[in-house]
Image (cartoon, rainbow, N blue to C red; front, side):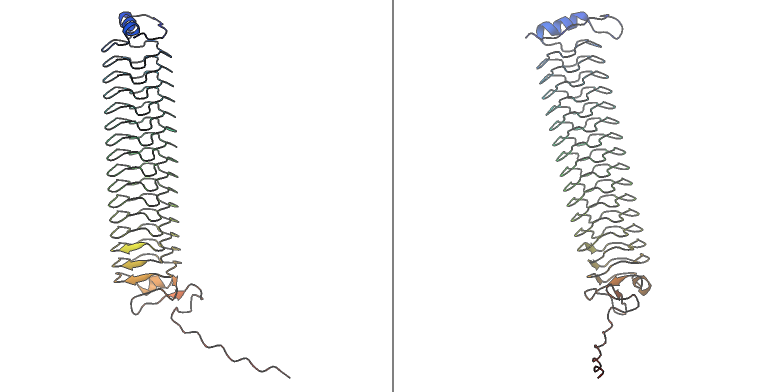
Length: 385
């Protein structure tokens, strides 16, 4: 097999430099497993299908090189220049790519099982359908990268930059994304069950239909995130920022949302049974048609919220209902609801409360009770002659 590339021999056999004999062997045979090619100049080299298992290519220049289907298992590519390189279908399991520059690289369907990509630059790289289980991507720069349908289960991406990245249908089960920046990222239908997203930034991210059951999103920033239809059962969302988020139809059963900010969030049709929303901020949130069975709303802020939902066995003591719209709300076996709370809210004829409690009509003045029967219209007085 003859490989075409330019050999730029610069100080071979010196400290931190490649072995000239190894480079000549690579050119002649198209294989150099276990070779020393440190700092080799291989820009635009045609190395497709090359056997480089265990080879030391640290600090090598492989920019725009063709490494399609190359075998690079347990190779050392730390701090290598792979900008624009084509590694599609390559085998890089257990390879060391820490600090490597892979901006704009093609890594479609590449195998990177347990690879080390910590602090690597992967901006705008194509990693669609790549296999990265157990890979290390801590502090990696992946903004604008395409990771759609990639396999990243149990990978570590702490502090990674994923702004605007495409992760639709990616498998991130059990992955660690704590402190990662996923602003404006597409995570539609991604699998994130049991993943760690503590203090992660997900502002304006699309998580529609994503699986986040048992995920840890403590103190995560999800302002204006799209989570319609997402699975968040048993998720940890304590102190998370979800203001303006779209959670229409989301499953939040048994989720912990203690102290979470859900101001102006869309929770229409959301399932919140047995969820913990103590001291949560739900001001101006829309909970129309939501399912709240056994939910704890103690001390929460529901001022200006729309609460046209069934609230059964809910704890609501100390909640702020000032300006809340209870039209269509059904309160059954509710604990802690007082007349003082209801005096600041309003409802309609479909609002159902425990005996002895009442609420003003939203269409009437604040001092006109909902159940007050309107007086019959007085007969018109005869016209003056």
